[in-house]
Amino acid sequence: MTVRRLGWLAASLMCVAPLRAQLPVTTGVSMSLAEHRVTAGAGLERSSGTMFGLSATTVVPWQALEARASLRAGSLGAHEQSAFDRDVGEVSLVMSLPVSGWIALEGGVVVRRYESSLAAQRWVWGEVGLQGRHVMLDDALRVSAGISIMPWVSVSGVSRPDLAVAAHSALGYSAGRLTATIRYGLERFDFPARNQVRRLEELSSLELGVAWKIR
View 1 (tube, rainbow, N blue to C red):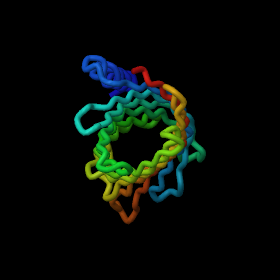
View 2: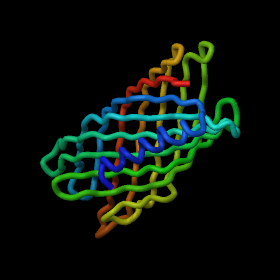
View 3: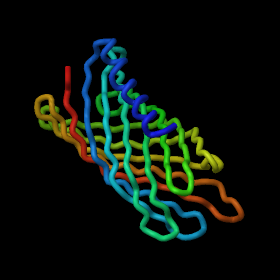
View 4: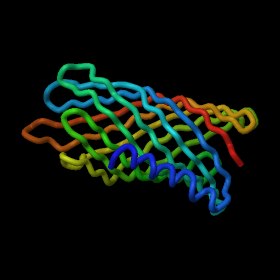
């Protein structure tokens, strides 16, 4: 799946369903400083760069279920000679169901593609987790943190990881229809050993975002 096709899929998810159902819609843009790290027996390979994103969020009346579709794409430059420059693009769909005033269950699907001069690699996974939330200053300031596991991960060209986890924390401030956020996220994938060499892979990102509530 090319980055262009990922974009068309994200646009469909973001626009068509909420508009047809006349649900509340919030759209956003973001910029992420991302770092990708891999260890696979030849030392640490690092690449980093900037990713840009689009998102749309709506809330379904049933149990206040929140649905968020997002698209991110960018380029990561290699830090070592053994690493490769790569382009990355991803589409995600995440659902959040509040179970109390400060805890929510989360579940979602992510499709990601890395492409370099050497090869292209497609990642697909499902994730489930918990998110803690707290609001202050009459709901103007929101703090959240969450952790999730990926019980199912598919990676082209390599075996599935033994362990896949993710964690994030975020701070948001709202003024009228506008919300500014800063978010840090970390994903870690531990692959089974092959020829006594174990592959570990991480992607971390610091994201700055702005969202506007359309209705």
